[in-house]
Image (cartoon, rainbow, N blue to C red):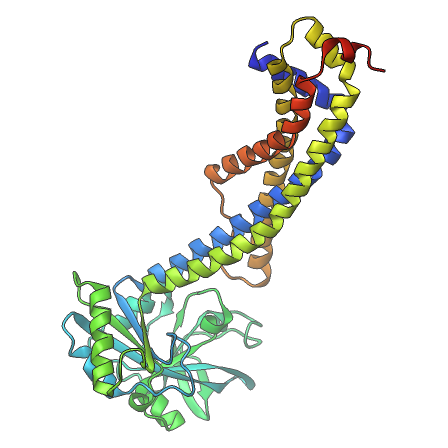
Amino acid sequence: MRIFEYFKIAFSNLSNRKMRAYLTMIGIFIGITAVIAIISLGQGLSVAINEQFETLGTDKVFVSPGTSAFSASSTAANLTDRDVRVIESIPGVRDTLSFTYTSAKIEYKDEEHFALVMGVTLQEGEEIWEDTWGSYFLNGRMLEKGDNFKAYMTYDYTQDEKVFDRSMKLFDKIVINNQSFEVIGFQDKVGNSGDDQTVYITGDAYERVFGVAIEDDIKNIIVRIEQGADVGAVADKIEKALRNDRGLDEGDEDFSIETPEEFQASFNNILLIVQVVIVGIAAISLVIGGIGIMNTMYTAVVERTQEIGIMKAIGARNGDILSIFLIESGLLGLIGGLIGVMVGLGISKLVEIGNTLTLGTPYLRMWWSWGLIIAALLFSFLVGALSGLAPAYQASKQQPVESLRYE
C-alpha cells in the first residue's frame, strides 16, 4: 500500500466519526491557539519596541543617576554640568544633550492638566536634539537655543478631548507654573501617554519657571558618539572617567550607562522569559489533547478489530496497519493545529485592532511568518502521531484469525 492510500483510509475513518474527531481536536486546538496568539503578539511587541530604539540611533549612549537609564532614583547622586564636561572630554564623544523634568500644571483655555515638563539644554548649532527626536517631528519647528518661553508640545495635545477639550494649534498660548509659553511645534505620535503628553521647554526657561538650574539637577544625558567610533568602547571610557571623577570604586557607581543595544537585549530577554512561561502553560493543553487522541485511537482499535483482521487477511502487513493508525492520529493533531493557527492569528489581529482603537499605541500588533505556521502545524501533527503510537502498535500486532472472530 502506498502512502496516499494510507492517507485516503485515514481521512475516510475520520469522516465516519466526525463528532468524535472534533471533540478529540479540542485540546490541540486550544493549545496551538494560545501558543500562536502569544508568540504572534510577543514578536509583534518586540518588533515595535526595536523600531522605537532604532529611531534613537545606534550611535547613542544614555547616562542617568541610579541603576537604570530613564528611571533616575530619588536617592541617587544627581548628574551635573561637571559630569557633562567630563563626558565631552572623552575621545570619541561627538556631543551631548542633557535634560531634567518635573510634573507641573499645564493651563490651556481655562482648563488644567498635570503633565511632565522636560527642560532641555540646547547649544547653538547643536544637532543631537533633532537627531534623537527629529523622526517624531510633526509640524511647526523644534526648540532652539534662545527659545525662552516657547513650548514644543507632543501628539496628544493636537487631539480634541485627549488632554484638553479643544486641540492646540501653532502659536497658541499655554501657562506652565503661572508662566505663559507660546506653542511653536508638535511632536508626532510615539505611542504611550507619557511621551505623547510631555511638554518640552529650554533649560533656561525651566530654571526661570521652577527655580532649579538644570546643570545641577540633570536627570539624563544623551551622548552621541563620533561616526566610526566603537560605541561600547566609548561607553566603557565614559563609565571609567565618571567613576574616577566621582572617586568611586568599580561596582559602586551611583550612575548608569546604557546603549540602545543593551536596552534591546534587556527587553528581549524579559519578553522571551514571559513568552516561554506562558507557552509552557499553554503546552498543558497540548498534553491534554495528546491524551485525548490516544484515548480516541485506543477506542478506534477496539471498534475496528474485525476491520484490521480483514485487512491483514487480504495481505496488509503490520507496517501498513501501523502507518494507517499513525497517520490517522497525526491528522487529528494536524487539523486541530490548523484550526488553532487560524484562531490564534485571528485573536492576535483582534487584539491589535482593539489596541489601536482604544489605546492608539503601535506596540501591540500581530506578527506572523510562514516559518511559525509551518512549525506549529508540524508540531501538532507530531503530537498527534506520538499520541497514537501505542494504539497503532497495538493494532499492528493483532492476529488476523483472532481479529476476525472478535465480537
